[in-house]
Image (cartoon, rainbow, N blue to C red; front, side, top):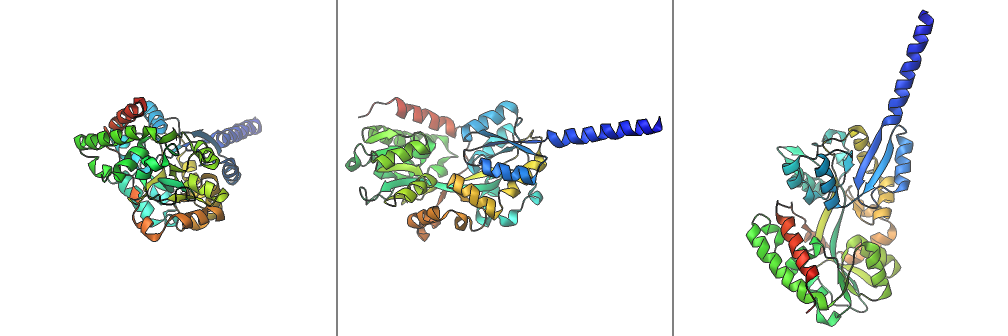
Length: 357
């Protein structure tokens, strides 16, 4: 009887252990390219008790999903560094990060400090950097050799040969190109509205010059490769991909400063796999994994000397685009204050609805 009971208890314990080992799923809410199959496969090989489940998203959708659930449904999210502070203050959808569980000594100090500064609330940090990049201008230098910045998108000499994306980045870039500093106006909604009204007038007048408004990176690549468009707003990573195919197409950091984003790691408030989330963060900071990640995204890792871990073609594209003065003139996205996105959303709708002049 005693032997049978002992055997039964042992079998039950084994089943319980087996069930818990199979139970953990790391649910990542992220951008396209940030959790490629090759990296997931390597991670699951190293941590066989964890399965990775990926939901692709963008900043607006991430915020909406986490707001709707109070921070439930995901174990790791990757919002941009300027999209955390206000959301956390109002909705509390993230946990504070335990930096002792992260290999922060591998992260570039300036990027780590930038994210800590932007995401610290009541003395607690809510994110760490993952990848970074910029938004600026892309040009075919054989057809548009004198492009220097945002105003070129609306230059009549490129009539019907320019493109942009009707999202908040073009509003900010146009504002800088007009001599304004929209980031400094975030705390004054009346002033920000005035700036955005000027931007709206500019971009409505520009509609007759723009060939088309691109939706995604592949869309833009096709427009540039075909020659339909010779000057466009772009993410630097998209321009780098094209440079590898045609070195005449280069990324141009705007004279007013390239708009610089940092995508982060943040842990949702009701996440259920914190240990696995920290494992993933540290895993993707390893040099061999960084190389795979950068090949997938085209962006630069936030690790120290991340540019050195880019594929050779992208390293060449970076060298062709950035001079030291450009790197000193980066314009990091500032924390978005409540009400700012409402203003921008209405301005974008005005631009979309307006007819070309």
